[in-house]
Length: 314
Image (cartoon, rainbow, N blue to C red; front, side):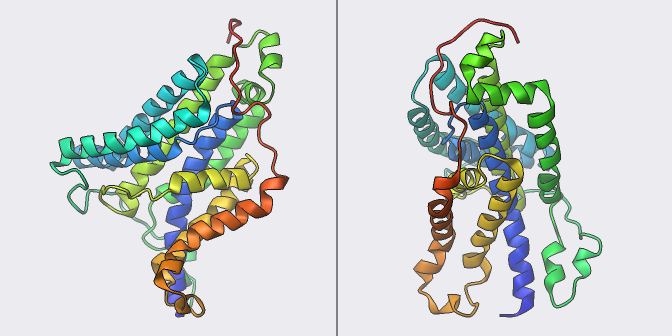
């Protein structure tokens, strides 16, 4: 396999890392607050169509913003169901996913005149070459050429996320709401607003990831382009034990796994496999990783449990 192909495969892996990591960070905020969010896939779906439309109308910055706001809206709907009405978290997430498919088709028909895709080559950010790294020899520099500015921003987002969760009053209270809401309530802090905030952030990041997928990766909206990446992000979150840095490493693993069927299908050993099996590789990697670590992870203690307490102050 030429190293040139390896460099391009790394570049593809970094793009998919960005999608998985942003969505996984969304799941982290939601589940740290105590709300399980399997509706991330649906929030990504609505982010793809709304982000593509916003980009066509006003440019990529507006597209990413509209995609994030669209995901945030579905996040608030999930919070309304799970926090206010105490609907089962899994049931609500499934409804969000199913509803998003229908909404995506409706909005695509409304905005683009066809139900399944937009016009190709929607506007996107100017790409850039990473200094020094883009000059790596043997074709590896290709991994750092024509990079979207959103990719390094995703890596850098780890720093403020760690700061918010560990050093701010909001982050400490959010984690407390997911670990022991009774203790949180006992010191006069309302649990419901914290959980609403966690799920809202979750939806915004998932919508942003979906918009990035449509705008920067595929450069168009087409139906079904998320291909289960929201669920893979959940797997990365579990593999990362609900911690930002570990989540980043898991997202890198799953991101590079996505590049195998897209660019490395001609590599030694891989090329001997049937095409159908090659396309299964990202999902097989996900299953193996989760199966190997599922007994060693420790989710937030109160995640998935309804809490009926009320009152208190922010």
